Amino acid sequence: MSYGQTGGVRSGFTGAGIGGRVIDIKAFIDERAISPYQWLLVALCFLIVTADGMDVAIMGFIAPSIIHDWGISRPAFGLVMSAAPIGLVIGALTAGPASDRVGRKWVLLTSIFLFGVFTISTAFTQSAPVMALLRLLTGIGLGAAMPNTTTLLSEYAPQRKRALLITIMFCGFNLGSALIGFAAGWLIPEHGWRAVLIFGGALPLALLPIQLWLLPESARLMAVRGAPAARIGKVLGRVCGARFNGDEVFISNEPPLPTRKPIGVLFSQGYGFMTGALWVTYFMGLLVIYLLTGWLPSLMRDAGLTVTTAANVTAMFQIGGTVGSILVGWMMDKVRPAPVISAAYVGGALCVLGLGWIGALSSSLTVLVFAAGFCMSGAQTGLNAFAPSRYPTVARATGVSWMLGMGRFGSIFGSAIGGALLGLGWQFGAILAMLAIPATLAAIAILLAQRTKVSEEATPHPTAAH
Image (cartoon, rainbow, N blue to C red; front, side, top):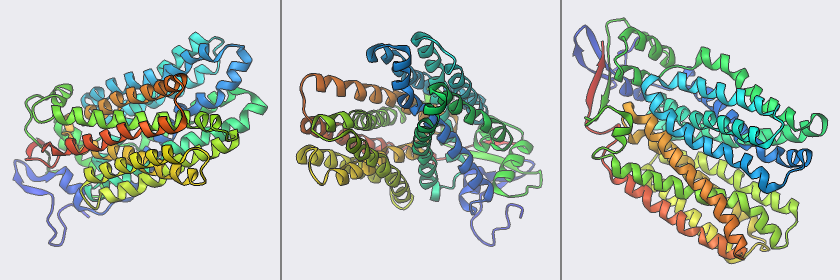
């Protein structure tokens, strides 16, 4: 069906333009039913995030085998373990501006190629310094993938279902982390740790031809960048299952901006305070999550639990996070999203306070760890769905990727501070209760971010492609 046959429903036309009908791309997507191709796009992005989750988690599963084979100490291997997180920061900070300039699709394809090739290359290293360098390069590819999948999917998902679809996509990360764990358990005894790296790199490279064939470029970005209307119509019609006559004028309604440089938009009037608030929220959330997931097993073992029990209880955090992500995303599409995210962070603060209060030997430990994962990971994934709508198309990937990049410092700090507090003699209850502070700060910061009145729903300033 060609666009315009809406049977009386308000359409995305904004009037007659020079050369034909004027179509607001966002309104066009929002007013139509979700097409099979849009569901396919969710699946394509889900697969990228799954591969991302595999390669982010891979070193944790093979590190004991490498340390044993090479006969090096854990502190010496710490250089390798810290390399990928640094690369993630670099990748996130550079990929967003590149995506806003050259397109979402090609930055995504490049990121998949990078982390696939460098993960396989890591399998053939013979020393920790070389492995650290390759993990740094792998991290750059990984850091570029996540913000661009988020941005691309947000620009094709109708607003009424956007948060839910993005949070479903992010569940692929947990799936990938679990998948590489199962693969490691199967491959290491028979083929050694190098086989795990080859498997972890081969899977994203196998996805690359499929993504090259099926992944669309953002129609809204093409309109902002002045691409020919015929090209926009071809891509938009393919994704949304529509036909165009060839005389359309495509526009992307955008708020007026003082600059068109992506990084400049982030700190321009109206956006600077919001950008800072989003960074604080993401930083605080990752600090809590990484300290919990990284040190909770050690804290429980120190309190007297067995290794198996500690691992099983910690796994409940990830399971709770998967469930929480989907439900938080569903709620965000029903009511105002920022209060939903803030409430989840407050719930996380109460859960970690409860964990500190009951102690590691309580019968309620598993339930509270599940609830903490539900709230904290649910809020953090919801924030990924919330951020794209706060920035205009010309700076959307930059805004999302820089939030993720700055937030990564929270993960690095959270991992480091856990070890420091243990070294100072802090016990289970004190460390867990302390985490209520950053969780509460995250809840406050996200509400401050919403107070800024700029977003893709702000006063429109149309950018057209003829």
